[in-house]
Length: 192
Image 1: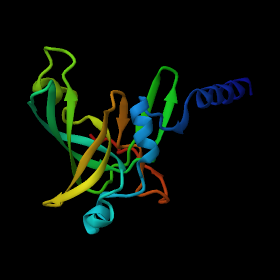
Image 2: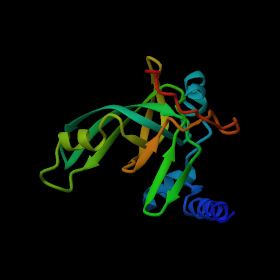
Image 3: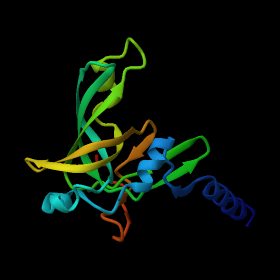
C-alpha cells in the first residue's frame, strides 16, 4: 500500500513538472508576426489557390532541408532555405530547464523562404548563415505566399526563427487543426 501511494505521488509530481502551454515567441518581432500569422492556412491550400493568399501572413513549422547563402553588400547575408512542412499545434511542453516541441511526422510538402541576416559580427559570412540554418533543424517561418515553383511554395520573408531546443516527430501523429492527435506506438526491436 505504501509503495503504491509513493508511486502515485511520484507520478503526480512528474506530471506537474511537465506541462503543455501555448508556444512562446522568442522576441518582440516574432510576437508581432505570430499575432498576424495564420497557422491554419496550409501549403496545399496555397498551392491550389495562390491568388487567395498573396496578402496573408502564414505561420509554418518546417525542418530545414538545405540553406544556400551568399555575402551581399550593405552588411547583409542573403540566404534561401528549403524546408519540409510539418503540422504543428503551436504548443510546447515545458519541463524545468527545458522546452520541447512535438511536431507531427506528417505535413504538406516543401516550402522555401528567401531571407537575410544582418552581419553584426565582422567575421560572420555566408558559411555562418548555412551553419545557423543547417539541415535537420526546426524553423518556425512567418511569410506571405508569393509563388509556387515546381510544387514548392515560396514565401516572402517576414520572420524566421531557427529553434535551438528539442523537438521530435515520433511521438504524436496529427494533421491540420481539429484532427485527432494519436500517440505513435514505439516500434518494437527486431527479434534476435
